[in-house]
Amino acid sequence: MRRFLLVDDEINILQALRRMLRQKIRDEDFLVEMHTDPQQALQRAREVAFDVVISDFHMPQMNGVDFLEQVRDAQPDATRLMLSASADFGTIMNAVNRAEVFRYIAKPWTATELEEIVRLSLERRDKIMEDRRLADAVRVQRGVLTPQALEALRLEEEEPGITKVRWGLDGSVMLD
Image (tube, rainbow, N blue to C red; front, side, top):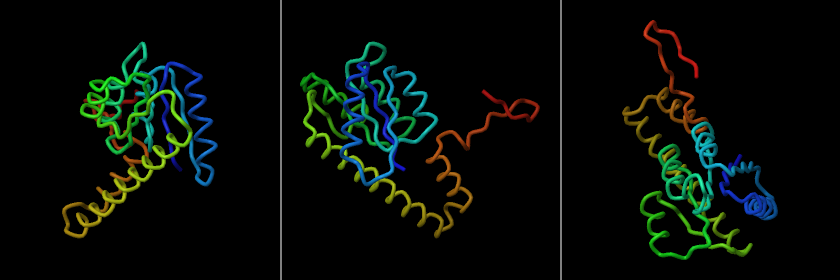
């Protein structure tokens, strides 16, 4: 299943993005999560793996570059896209350099443009995941990575944080 995380302080923008995704990605099983609060979206990104994250640049609580930079730290394999009405070259370069944004989408966008960017984003994500799978298979073959460690990596990719356990001083498991 494909997962998209959409973040913008304007609900109308989120709904337009979701509508476009539903119209253009008909042949795949996918889920779209929308957040108007970047902090909540960031928390969600720490819990669930996303294929594509699309964020607005101008938001009151946190700008899109800071948000996507933190998403990159939590999910380095997620393809990150930035939306903005600003065409400021410095803003765009900052997003690319700090948050490793794959594409910059100017508001207002056209359906054709957005469809192409999403298609390229999914292809990029698939390539990253295939490269990782092949590299891990070679590591297992060479004895650098155990099959158990490989499974832990796979689980962590599916559900970020699932392999992390906080232990108490007495050996008990600490729950949040």
